[in-house]
Length: 136
Image 1 (cartoon, rainbow, N blue to C red):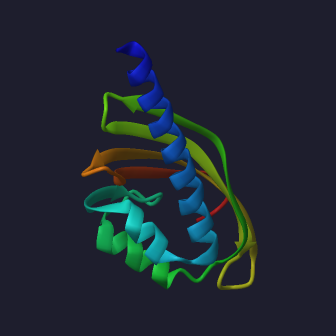
Image 2: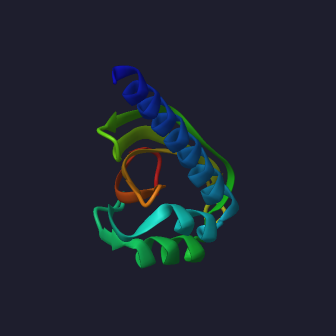
């Protein structure tokens, strides 16, 4: 019994790591459709500015983003699986680029994403982001 549960946990962890990478790549490409496919309809988030945000708000903010990213990558990503259908991913997102005003930025966000498997599909149900370095 322990071996299948461990294997299930490893599979879930790997799947979530891949989805986190896909999410960060979608931010780089301003691809809200890809993120929308991973975010639950009942998603609840807290932005780096401390604002509460639902799924529609997250996707709208992505669509309206004026920053031009040159690079975006995840570091320090850790995934913990709790039971058969809940996992938490914590990591840092390092982004470089130019703001609307043409000024260059180099910033790092730390995030906590809560994932839940529903009907065989992992979805992000909650997220909180803080700005570690740089300006939003």
